[in-house]
Length: 175
Image (cartoon, rainbow, N blue to C red; front, top):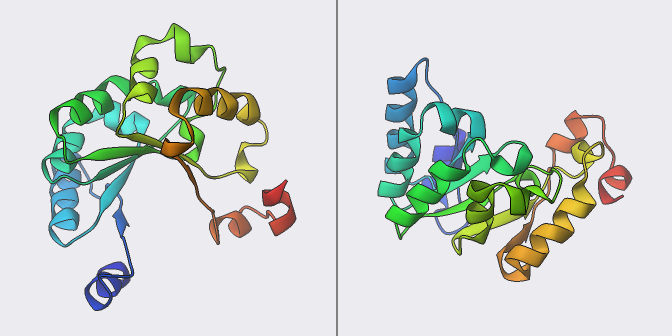
């Protein structure tokens, strides 16, 4: 309710991203439609949910809104589905959140679906969740991604206040 109130009160200042809420597949699909109909800019979806319920992407694509996908292994679980929607719905775009699922950079060459996803001109990669990624090959993956997508499709995002909920500090996030 607070997100909707902020959007209605200040549509020029806020871009609201929704979540796939609902008790079952039909409930999630209907809830996403309602969020998009109320002015939300997009929906954040785990790659595993996209793989299990790819029709959610069609709802977002049909509305011409943003897909924010999060997951591991270069979003392997949902790469084919995301590319399919981007190819079909020209008004939509996608953001691979949390570095696009840091993994071995060789996956960008060995997995055709992942390679196609990160080559897509309407996929952007948000470098977010820095402190929670310390155990993953973030630096090598990020360098490889920048070599593929360039700086034009790279985004930098903060995790505040979420980082503080994970007992991180400003200094650890900067590191």
